[in-house]
Image 1 (spheres, rainbow, N blue to C red):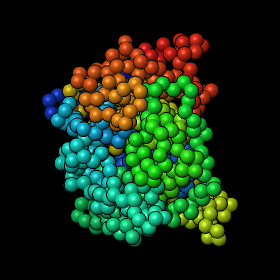
Image 2 (image 1 turned 30 degrees about the horizontal axis):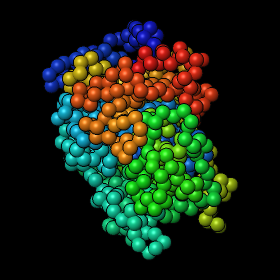
Image 3 (image 1 turned 135 degrees about the vertical axis):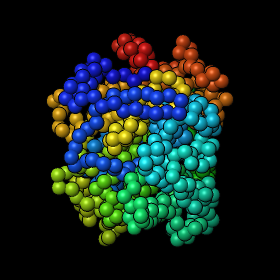
Image 4 (image 1 turned 90 degrees about the vertical axis):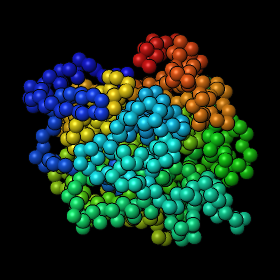
Length: 576
């Protein structure tokens, strides 16, 4: 259940009704018609059908310059953030690709979708639920999928949910088929299937990489549309970038941005002493890579050698900057084709990623680093400055000194302070909030809150567009009624770590970790779970975690057994 201040919310709704009037929007579903009362935002600079560019980045934690990461070189995302609202506390509902993407694209939580792995398609298993792009398609948008928007495979019916969600068949970059192939050159003169994989792009199969291909396809689409008869038809473009998802395969020149002798270790890179066994993810997918396999790291707790930890962190950041470069080219194309002034841009990560924190790698947990994501929202005429500046492509490799090929802030070609986030909020939001928010922004029918399990079109999130308007107006002194907690979850097949702990098949799930995050605390309860009935048994608690972010921002000290926190623990348990 979403936790909000109901009294303040009612007061705000009554005030809006008095000032703006009552607007009745009829949302027609296949089997049921639901009426929603919603006062649309009136703005003379932002009327009509606006395009949407929906950018999903795989395994992207908030390791961005605009989020205060001083190491990250992400000038193009930072440029976008300087004309946007950025949410510092946005959370995925599960730290695994298929459940997270299906969750935010349908605005349903994993428990409602019965999807915790990659093995089922929600339309067949639970209900013919409407997706974000499907809703836009119904409202006259041309919907385009490029790269990884839905999780490829069974979870999206092997078609990325075509034809329901998309106007034409989704584009998948041809070179993505080499993801699990030995294409990484090594010192022995052979190619391997490594975790860390800097490459010469011209020598790769197909002479390219997936994110390069996706970006070029998107650019070609925008140019073609501008010249076509349907140039003014609104579009919803979903583009999913594969990096920084493993393997860390990127053009090798991006390594020059992050000299290995400048890389450090995670600030909390040891196993927490009071971490329950069930909470641990043994990063099995990392261990399968040839360069990791030969390290002979003991299972499940053996740490990676420190030098390899630094190499892995370097690989993640280099992949990140490579992706940022591609995104910058897309933003420039949006500008060059004249669509930028009329396009809402959303950028998110599908979930976070551990870079050695808690001695863990990858995702597969309820830790902050696994479920916290960046969320950047750009709305023309609202989050822009009064004098709008054109988007441009900022070549990321310009951040490398030409003299010594090492990154130095003092000799960067572009100042790191050039792009400062325009609007920043600490309010808690969830990815299930995206569906109603996007509909609200472009003024199409907003999915109502789900009241019945089988309702075709509804949302388990809330529109945060009113929150954006509140932020942009600078009403910081006025209290705004909003969520006081957000929720995530993760399944486990056993209490002790085993090979499938990270990604258990549905039939093997025996426990579920339900996690609540407030402004100060994260509390996780691991309970028995019936995977046949999709039911948790909240009375059978096998482990608890409580982290006080005021005292412990890295979640290294589990205080669930401390008497001082007993009342807090009980209250958060009740909310779960």
